[in-house]
Image 1 (cartoon, rainbow, N blue to C red):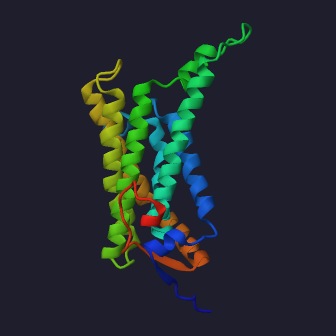
Image 2: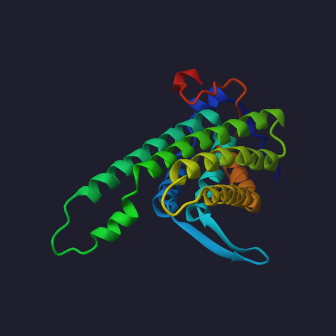
Image 3: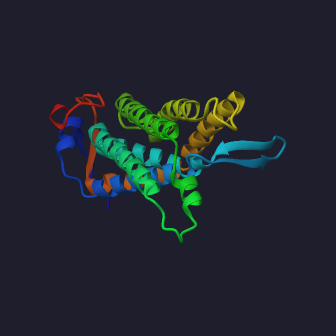
Length: 248
């Protein structure tokens, strides 16, 4: 049995359409975003690479790139306007997570509870790291989505791998270039060389993740497009991050 052709939607129509799986993809996007920032953002890990030796990297890089892959899926399947909605949801969710962490850490601990120091170490992120994380996420995700949407038009929807990898190269470059210098440059325990090395390593690992997971991205995109029955092209979309729903 041959597959039914996908119905082409322009970006403005896609922004107003109800999709069956969009809410699930957005939930996965926000969940991975919050967990990767909460658990791995501030830890500098190290691995011993053959012929190279010890190589430091940000621990959050192990899972945070999955949010970018889901961001690729959102833009590819649902269009830039819907991806923009998810980025803003993730942005406000990050800010609420920060607010909740500040309040909970600041609450006076019970006299019999001995975990306050550890709790502060894990959840008491400095304002500098919080600002760097939120700024890098916001800028990187919008660059990623913009590049992918534009490349989809240029390639007329073919060669998905070129735009998923290409958008990640640019989006993750912005993310890495913002986060580590803003968060750790001249901070205790960090030299300028370490900041640049970790930022570069983070970018390289994120792009490598995208390349390695390309078959999975193809499968997810194909599955969602078949279930949704449409192909969204952002030919009439306004790409400002601040555009309102009625202006897509």
